Length: 194
Image (cartoon, rainbow, N blue to C red; front, side, top):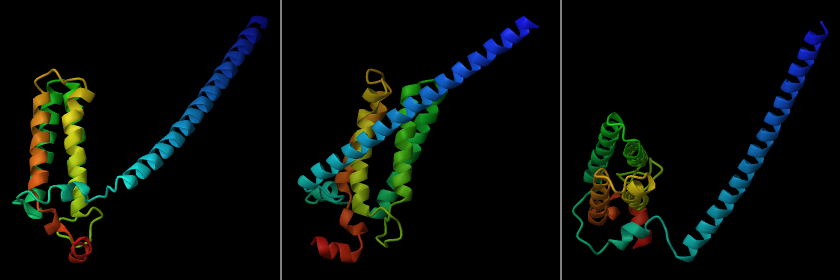
């Protein structure tokens, strides 16, 4: 009986120690999370301040290409976005089947970026969707950079799969420079910009 009681006391003590350790770990994780969140807020404020100083807006990238020939309308651009979403989704599936984790993840990230931005874009300039067409152009530039950097970030820059991302990033740059961004903006916005 004495040994059973002693074993029960040891088990209880072990459970208490484990509970205390778990609580301490949870407190540390919470503390780290608060520091990360605070740092992220500060970084965001700093980035906003820098963008403001540089006079960057959602129209900066589309307006930078204003002098180039424009032959892609908002409607055609929406179809190209659908094609890009399908392209990246297909790549992601193909790479996943081949067990190429880095390229598959990169492809699915790009597919979700293009698809989400497209779903939220006001291609017609009606104001019914939250992303106006010029903001879409700036987000396209971010997505193109994401595609171009994906091979390096996901560890397959030296592999053949990287070419799929670099070619599509170059294609996206061509589409950005050839799209008539003003055509998809509401008329009052155009008057303010002009």
